[in-house]
Length: 225
Length: 225
DNA sequence: CTTAAAATATGATATTTGTCATGGAATCTT
DNA sequence: AAGATTCCATGACAAATATCATATTTTAAG
Image (tube, rainbow over all chains, first blue to last red; front, side, top):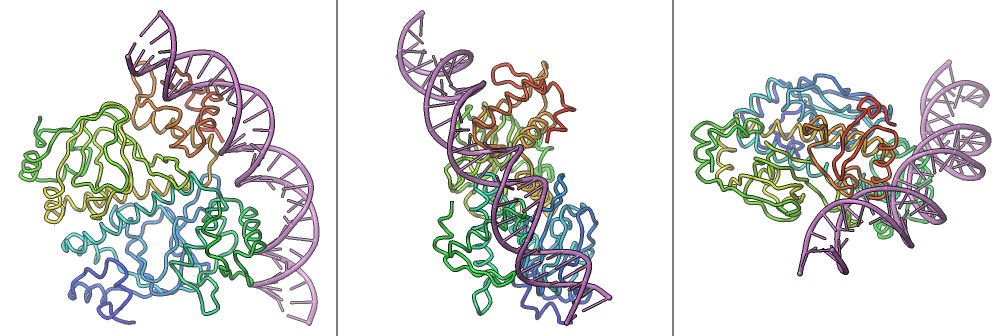
């Protein structure tokens, strides 16, 4: 397994603010973990004893609603850090994490990173900033959920995935989700999600190949009400 | 104006982690501000140059949706701290704050508090913890918004206000909101909010006197689907 | 390769929620 | 106190979304 000091991934998250020495210590005690598509990384209510740094693959963070349905709260890709919040608040995690494809992660034990958190102000401030950002994003999500139609939310998640996670060489969204996942992100029934995607297809806004989705008319997608 | 060192309010927020010396400095440079019911404290997009500590009164934090409607993201009462996020992220605020009744606040300039944030790890960790909590709360809100019916959300906000902000001696919720505010918290049309409250009243779950609302049957409210 | 299971698709229908219109009640202003 | 204005309430209807049923297609398993 590689060394954190040389790992480019950390540039994407707050680990970039660790000093060289700190990184070397982290590197020495981290462990690599592999997860297969569909595998649960951790589950709501568990006590996490460390943070996960995503090296490759994608996962969803979900929360169980009282009606028994899972709601996807966030998608996390390469460079993402899972378990920040639990680390900081010293509470059990309030979200579950499930791999959407095969994943490669580094696991850094709590004891190691907590030490850095309390002693390296640059690192702390960086975590703080990241958290502030998450919070802002969260507010936007809330407003979207409260005020926009399902169709609009679906259009937005397609554009979001396109813009943030990119496409393969044929132009298909590089993150592949089931219709059920789409429903759970958008916050609607699976059938409704399917219907809307079908409609988008009919209208030429997207095309599909199996589960893969390609945005064909980004401009019009933007104007969906 | 009182001194922060002696102010009991600070026990409710992360300012409690400041040392005596820090508090004295803060106290020396803080200013008192009064806002009348309905007055805007700050508006989405503004640059805040400090944080507000709520001494008395209630305000709503709102975000404008693209459809032109305001969405209430959070209610803040005595002890709450406004502007944390902007302080930390050094970005313009993404929310507006509006007084729901007459308010009394202390304003602490950014320069003073930023210094403490970078030098007092106990304080930083406390802010971090508070932020982690906000984030968790935010996830819950998102799931509620996505998965629960308007009626259910209305029932929950009534119980939330009851549990967190209390009632007056007659049992009426101590926070008084317009129907429009309720609609904007729950994320629905004003008419729908009115209709649901009327229905609750008919069913004996609540009673009203002007704008005041009293929960009459908490148990049943809990079971509203 | 065949069969079973899961995911996708679509119709029919019920329910929820939004919109528009209108009238009354409360509150503010002068 | 009268008028103006805002807020609350409710009906009628339209639109969005959920639910149930049932094919069809795709994927997984043996």
